[in-house]
Image 1: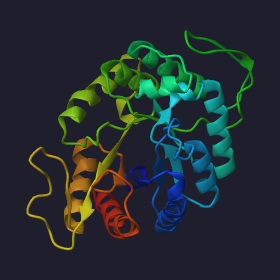
Image 2 (image 1 turned 30 degrees about the vertical axis):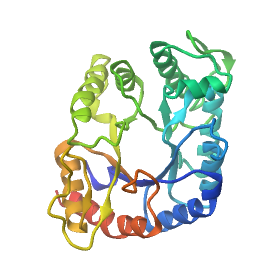
Image 3 (image 1 turned 180 degrees about the vertical axis):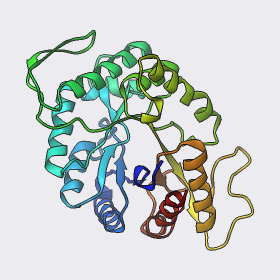
Image 4 (image 1 turned 180 degrees about the horizontal axis):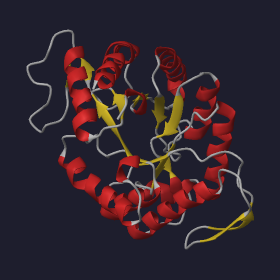
Length: 302
């Protein structure tokens, strides 16, 4: 994997009170050469910004960085309208959008929005249908008729804009297999990284499902959400007793991330603060200006 193929980003807060920080951080990251910023999508939280309204606003105030909802709350955003939304954002921003997709997790809150509750299996079926339909309704071509169990459209004209990459937050075996069949990337849940048991057990499910329909599993990215701090001096231990990454000096970060790419197939990293929230401006600057360029250089040398 080349240095160009690996993406680096950060996770931002998306509350109404966070708007000034969100814009400052996105603009700083844009200037510093990061690839992506992410926002959560919880439309049942009143103090939270609508993820897609916020993405559109930030993309309009930046030039290079891409954005995505990590991950889209699909049950509250019907797939045909989601297709229109992401292709419109792609057209407006010059392709700077990724579609993060989830089957829906907090069903009690989702149901509070008036959305019919689905069983876990049905939610994954709807999730897979939605990814297929978003791609059908992108990239031009003749009108689309699609008759699935959960989504039906009749003679709908696709947008003349390519579908954005689709990265999922799949956790269970059925959802992981759907990722292997129809998605372009996977974000392991619970901040699981490349050395975690969750990753080791889950990635083969994706790969086997992809290979079963003739896809090359290597085409499906793994993008890791993970926290960590940057220290001035090396840490004696960069992982805790449970094996979770804590952080360390710039050199320790570079060694760890380079190995993640070259030895474990990582193709992206999204930084959060050690408390799993948004990094502050200082942490973000060190990540973007000291760690990311050094990792890119190390990968390019291999």
